[in-house]
Length: 351
Image (cartoon, rainbow, N blue to C red; front, side):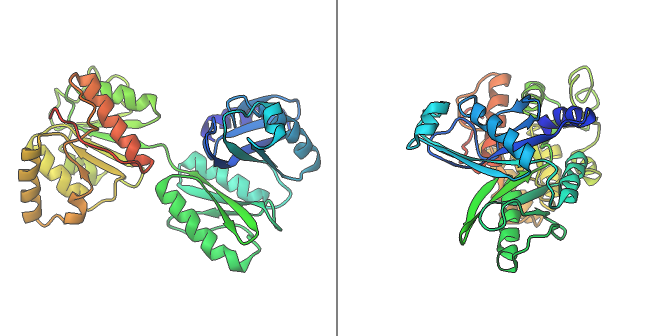
């Protein structure tokens, strides 16, 4: 969604009407995931993709109708549908695409609020009825504040809101039936942040790789000769401080990933103890298993909970046989991505 905002702003500035198409249901093999989007204006111009080219033509045609009438449409394509073959969906899966005008007659203020939340990087989820009696009804859901929107159905509001919060916590969009209706929950999580503790050699490729995947990267190191702009020219932020002091003035939440690369108890133990009081999405620490076992014993003695220690990935990184700093960085980032999307990870065998 964020990558489409510049296009949307340009179209809006010249007075174009446009529609948004979103993949709201998938099954089997599909070229684009749940939540994939494209926008189409009244001139037939488009940006984004819902199928990698397979059904875009049909979606563009539907978008023109939606722009003209203001009535949203749910388009369904599947392997058993001859139309799917005609438009090119021959991958063996099925998908449903919801097409709606971006300034609907109902609840336009909710769309405007969503844009403000995206600009402010506030985590939120938008629940939309895509099939049923109230197609187009929306509810904007947050983790720490009341939901907004005229949902119009007292029986489903509470369960939809609860499901939307769970989807937001997992950062994964969801599609679910409630009676005869189908609701799609679109998740808008902030840009993920990676905090690297230790400006060591592995941190250099890890910074590059993480930024290429959209992470904002902060380098934290109490040693000024390690945390320099010369070593990390592209880092979003460099903090010369011990980790516990740096963490005290940082926002650490479910969009934060922490990689502790110092494998030095002077840094590792205070960092882990400080993080035990916070809720980062991921914490990984470099070092051999024997070292981790000793460090964890000290942390237990200091009162750090088993629940937190069980969440620490140590040794850090997936077991891909990494040897070079670049390969180790790749293994670390792969583990973070696995955690982000709820997949199983492993450990680096070489540490």
